[in-house]
Image 1 (tube, rainbow, N blue to C red):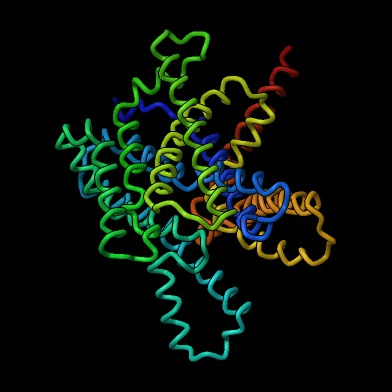
Image 2 (image 1 turned 30 degrees about the vertical axis):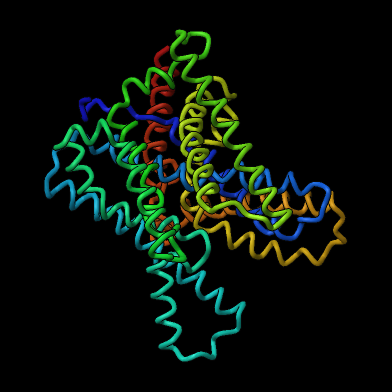
Length: 403
């Protein structure tokens, strides 16, 4: 593929939108999986919490796809590596450190720890940074930073050793499951999910799809009615396998949560891994399907949500934390509780989206806390739009004076 003619893929914003919706479902229903065990609709809460658990793995798959799609055909030199790390330090690492500080301070406030020695608090904050634990969702950014550290090495290996590119998915699965088994039977590291190797299969799958994008492009760009028999079979097998493994994953967790009788942890790991890897491919195809068939209004909303998804990911737990303080305001029956849970999801999604848009539009340095400002919300976009409007006005004026 020629880097100068690399195709822009606006569909990826729809992928990000679907992924962040998944994240919001998981975080919004997390308390319900504990509090609502004895309700008549517990299966619904369990279903929502687990079927939407594709969010973080899908983001990792997409991050890898974007990196390899944009960098694989470029010459690997010091300029590329320097530019890569500069962008990640400014737009990922710096926001991670600062947003972690805000969550850490909020946690100190809620746990009334401000009277502890300043040295102890600083050490706890540093420890939270190096474990992605300042708040429960920040492990994702922490493992992303780990992948960014590895990326130039992986790029060099996959460019120089083409056999590794062909076997990327197998290598990813081997590394990930090697880590899972090593940790289970030897290391016993409690926070294994904060280590990048726990997601290595998604990372390598994203690389594989990017490097061999042309056959995948044919698949995602073709509508069902225009597919040949082979593509239809692949699509049907993917979607059916995705649904079946997802339902099995939901059921084994449902049984365990109700009875407190657990299978070996590797079964949960296995079905989560299979389901979320299939989910990444299902979301990838779905994003292109949406681009073809969804109304323009829905696409506009999803595009904007996708553009600000990283910022929404960073701030939405604040909204949820404050919203959950309202639980004692209501007399909760089963349906009322369900409505309250889902209202929290919608409020967290809408308020965090509007909030980060406001910051991006009004404050040019908002990237320090929220990551890269989407082009559509940046000053450059507004300047170009003003220039286009002026040209259009001047052209209309000329036409009126010279009919």
